[in-house]
Length: 391
Image (cartoon, rainbow, N blue to C red):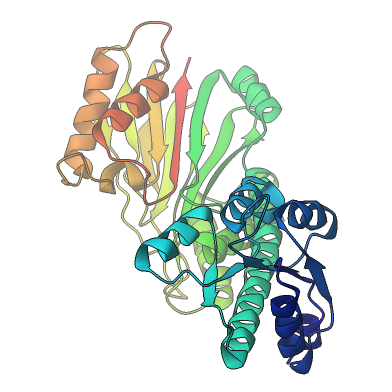
């Protein structure tokens, strides 16, 4: 028997001293040595609050306060919510047993006591209680670690001060929404200044969920940071994807990959040049005319084929036009009838959102409000959506 089990505090409550001593002898023979005794219900409540026992063996028929009431009062106290309480009683009928369990007892053994039954039940419940305490501590530690990891992952996203500076310097309006479906997610996005005329923007989504996907976002973000994109003036979006793909291919385990889109916004040339790695199709929308265009998202996912190549695409991007980048949860979620939203319906949502948009409203906020009215939550994947509007 583990020494930590044998050293647990056990409070034995019985107004019959003979029964107290009999149970004590049985447990002492088994190696238990931290035994305490109470002679009635009132004394049991007083001792329990001070002793904080790991187990209570409780007689049901006692003067003053009976065992049922003692059990109820103990269960009403937070510190005894999960303490094993084993009732021992001469009452054996199904109704009697039901009443004892309703009062909060964990288990029952009858009077007169059986040596093997006392030994087995006491040991079983103490081991179970130890296991549950261990799981609780593990869960608390894991929750704390996930909270730290979640805050670190949030730090990968652009800061508000950075966005404000970019909006002022390049004449754009930037809006975004990020929601993780779990404690940790596999989505992230970023934007940076290339020069006074150009911005670099990207959105990535790793396969899977949880810790593995989150670790991969740190891997990719680290690679992007090391490339120092703003200082590499001659590279194209396709060049960046090819380099990222080669590096990720060597880093990622088999069957893990990322989808990604990266592009350059040129406010002087009124263009958007981009390359895609199996990303969702970006949407370009004219706020004035309502015209909606889906851009080409074709390309190999990052980390799948070592020597994959990518293609640059250039489209016009002028004043009063808006680019929407988003994760696949916006098209792959199910509506209230169980039907997948799909690309076509998503484009219709964009049309309808723009058609009913008031002058002071955010396109992204209204779009996501329509999305929320359509789908069933909680979402099964991370949600990332970013809009960049030319002013």
